[in-house]
Length: 324
Ligand code: DGY
Image (tube, rainbow, N blue to C red; front, side, top):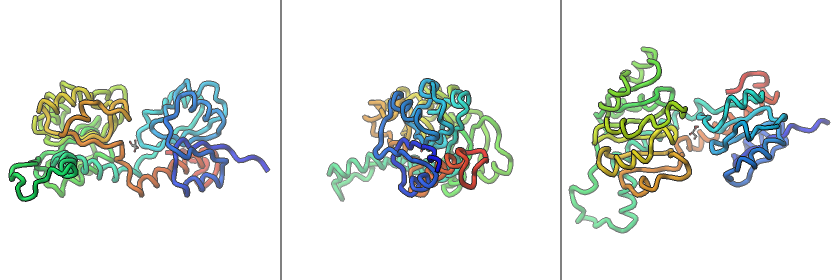
């Protein structure tokens, strides 16, 4: 009997997904969350045929150097800025991600942050938990937030997730503007009731701006001090895409100086570190990169990553088909 191929899973995963992988492979799965150093990644990847990795695992030329065994790297995420695709391709290693299965959960979460930032949910909860709610003596004009219904929503990056966010806006009677590299087909625009505008118009006109761009070198600081200065002081910024798309230092200044009303942020430059000034601001709602984290979606992502490894190593129904 020939030995099973080896697969390394860089972070804890659902036991049933690991069991599926174990049907085909000799699986080495991390039992606890690690921040793997480049040396550890290199060592782990050198001894396996396939790997399931997370967004914190940076797979680059240095990590792959001298690796002649690895055939597939399956990323647990739709974004893959942690993978050096050129280096992987050069080494003949298949790379996959988990598109589509997370669209609706991430779109839901964009709305969670938008509403929470508009209505100051996190700060109000901190106040309540600190025992500061005086009950009926509470001032009638305390904790006033911003209306969402009937306002203008802007979406920067109008892929499937952006479209999902736009579709939900109908329930809030919002006007939807978007900016994207290319115009959406008319039918999709109609379905989303969204109008294409320039980035400048988007910044100037919207009350809520949601960022859904992939992180590429061109998109680094797509929202920095000059862009923030063009937005309404009453506007709310939501980032569920990637840290680094926003200049967090410039955002903290705008929020502190009242040049922007509020922000809802799920991603940060230099994650898991969060800019100290953002941490200190009550008008920023902050969460630890959990936009896709619904039970159903994280399971679907894990299963898709497993399917991709199984297929790329020549097993299962997907054998021989290109991975996602
Ligand atoms: C992704 O898929 O890229 C998300 O950021 C991870 O949840």
